[in-house]
Image (cartoon, rainbow, N blue to C red; front, side, top):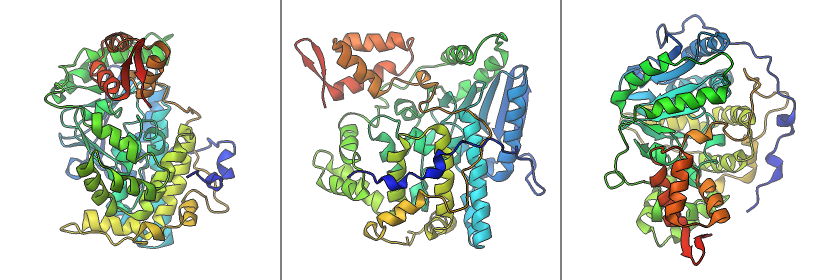
Length: 470
């Protein structure tokens, strides 16, 4: 089913305004909820709310943004490192409980919540377009707001403790913080599957799926920090060269990946084929129907149907539309559009209900969504989430940087699209294809495993070499 053109709002095609004031701390902001440190050329940002799994709030964002802008101008600051206090989480998400309570106060509360998302998205966009290397330690729970602080950085380090998820549809929201950009750009329908189901990826699975760029044992992180502090970049060295040096430095601390016998690639083989088969449609109803008709992975399909059936119907429909449209959005348009979508969700009853049911009720209960069924969520209702009210303008950002593909994609594992392009052009044997990518990615760990899995799933041996299977 084709997407309707009316969701493209002309307001988003206007010239971008960058006349945005840098936020400053407000009276009542928590002291020490973010810790900053400088060691030689390394500047570190440590989220410091371990009892709340370092959940992100306005107080923290108002501290981080000015520091990043300050460090960007400093010749003494070479690298920025983002991490979380404690061993449980980088950041488990935004402080949505506070937002839900705020929304109950009416229009002013909803506007204040929308302003928080604007503040958060400006920080995420600043990281995405930062002029110096940024590294995120995704050690522990990395969800929602924590994903926004990570996914747009050139270096995203997963550990054995990493738990990645975008659980927004469980609380009547949508996968924001740039999810419109990175999720549709993951292999196949992986992004749609993760967004709609809130499936978790643990440890090395974050690397294989394209969420993380590196996998290190958590015991190595302090040594990595010390080594990064020692790096010195000549003044004339441009950003790509600096990033290459950081990339090589990361490899020095690897203790190897868990074997695929011990931890096989999760979103792979027959399961991955089923994900692509069932989640390739442009309507949630068609996805449900495909899952109902799935025969090869019947148990998985049934479990997935049960999962989706308790999600907010409005969230599911808005999220799928967001991902399909987001394939064409630039990183700037992504955050500006998401700000508009978030504003609409703050006015929708599902967000407060979802947060209360899932996070504030003891024990958690099933949310009572409004509307309660997919059939009741009209096309017009979904369209409204992608429009901005008359008189309102796009979110002003803190950087003029923009792009349609991450400029630092090369630091992760090769994408399935890259492997397909090589196979179709050269059609050589599996062994030579694997060797080519291992060499191309400079012996990077995980490349051999991923390329081997993709070739096993997507190719067949022909008389002249590998043939890519549609």
